[in-house]
Amino acid sequence: MSPTGYPVEGKVNVAGPPEDALSALGLTGGLERSIWFFEDLTPGIEPDLPLLSGGVVLRARSGKSGDFTLKLRPCRRTQLTPEWAAGFTDGNGFEYRVEQDWTGQRRTLAASSVIELDPDLIASVVSEGADADTLLAGKQREFLHDCGTLRIAFAGLTPLGPIRATKWKNVPVGKFDTNIERWEVADLDFLEVSIRSETDAERRQQGLETAVRALGLSIDDDQESKTRRVLAKLARLASEDAAPGSS
Image (tube, helix red, strand yellow):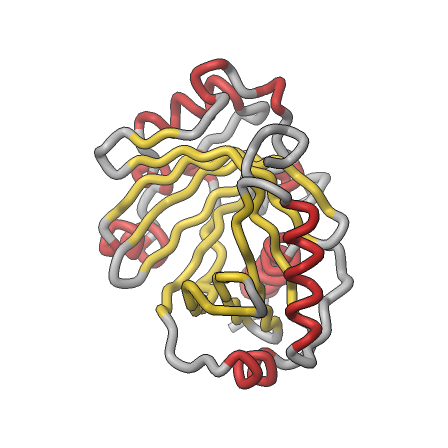
């Protein structure tokens, strides 16, 4: 376990063209999904990306199946009430987990509530202007009420995307069994290698970085999260589209 007592998802962002890394890993195909995030794009507000800046991530994923995630990251242990201090599932498509999120020297705690959804419902929200409030499950509302620090009117949020995501599971990298995920949107293209650790997280994280480099790949030293980079890009594109005279 990590020093907080929670499991760790350790991540390595690979630098350079993803095609080079995929070739080194011997990967083709993969499971494709589309990802949307939801943000408040009210003009003139500070900080920009107020939900993300306030530690709230709202994400919808759609492919053969769909889900909606309400995540608090970074999250303080002291904002998690006893009911939400540890992960659980309810047997009805709802999952809640608390884990450390490690990338480079960045260490954050993340608490995620996820509900399985029909991809058609997600499509109606992101492409037909339906209310994003329809995506939330009752348990997610409880989680936000009990542990969140922001008040959010979901009807006023803007869906940002889609991001093309491709994922490969159980990929051997050195001695590690990893997940590989690629995100593509506009001129951004990221490849991430991740592992989950219940024990010896620091040693395993260092070992993963060594194993990635042993494939002849470089590690991206940019400490800004890929979620923030992608959201910033999508928000700029949305603002440009909304500007007078844009077509």
